[in-house]
Image 1: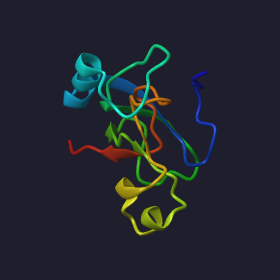
Image 2 (image 1 turned 180 degrees about the vertical axis):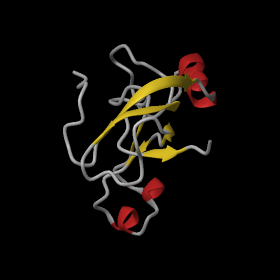
Image 3 (image 1 turned 120 degrees about the horizontal axis):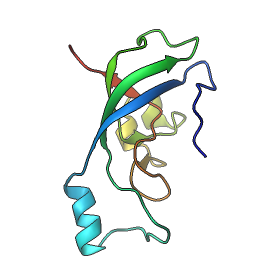
Length: 114
């Protein structure tokens, strides 16, 4: 179920404007040679951007209307690597468009320059 409102103080709601299909997505589709098994229908695409529509009360770096690109890595933010800022090495990392996560869900985004 997808919520249409910001539920937490650090949440933002983004109106998705574009989602790209990259080589990884094509690889999954063409070869089915990956280290996970897709058992249910899967929405691919993890290169995405959009416009901030709503922000939680504790969000300080973004405002409604900002254009953002989403980070496709979903890290735990509790492990040693995450605490050191190298969240891309998180042992519990999940990734957009890789089971069980469908496309365009994020806990982080990067503000784009005008």
